[in-house]
Length: 251
Length: 204
Image (cartoon, chains in turn yellow, cyan):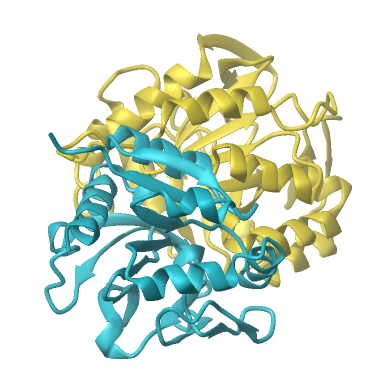
């Protein structure tokens, strides 16, 4: 899964949720990932919840105009069922919610009821330290324990997948902390690992966990044009689509 | 000179019309996204998209007054394609959030996928019975995102995917075809399937 992080309307490289370097227009990056044959594209607009500006529908409109042939997940600023429905009507196939899990878990349940749980991903910036799992509210920078209500939300299947973000190591090569995967308290919910995944051996190890459905890569897909195919070749033997695959084959 | 075909995308307020429209456009079809029967009448094929849960989708179709219209179009022999939830809506009924009647275009019932909670991501499509419209993507990976499945009698199931066991992911009854996967988001394989199904149904 290729991740495009968007801040103030621009795609950025993100480092540990505290430093950002511009990459360019998100729709250009999305077009590249689509052409290179990544399995899914996650666009996360990281400043939309803190600014209470809602989903970035202008961005979604631009993404829609590209005509992506790759599944698109959008996260950022989704606060209501109507936001989520409009995001799907705009361009996305699925939605990711992060701040809303802190603010109104019941609204996440309603989104799931409306779109179907298969369209809902719960995004959790996490860190393991001081003997426990800590959940970050990226708007305030404060950490807390994963609340029982949130654990129950995942346990009951309100979200079909949990995006576990190693926020402290995001942007750092080979730094993803696999303790996150072991510490996540809900078994049975497929996990997407993200944050500091860059090395094939490490991705192979993460995908080797029965709990992990996908590995998400952000910055490291943008450093070379053939990163997606290179990863695929290096992951031979792991059940991923073969390296020769691209979205623009014969039609 | 062959006239460009026109695809009528049924707009009932639930679904990913933009993605479907873009895929059709990329394949060279004209598109009309509409809830108006008169506009749909002037198209070559009706496409029922859908993302979400079955009951609110059926309610939306009922609220638009489209149930009888869609049934009559399917009965008339007009090419008719349902995608994902749009395929499930073709069934007699669904048990998602209680029992809800569907359009009843193809016999069968939509039931929870029992082998897993979800079927999300890329999986291999296997054609059943050599259906000529779908042979072109036999053995190829396509993108799925669902947790309920169309449990159709074998004679209507023309494609399967597998987790531990195979389950039906494509149905056909003459001019009516349903695809559980998202061809519009299945890259080259999906577009190949869309072209084959639409042109195949229109040429039949």
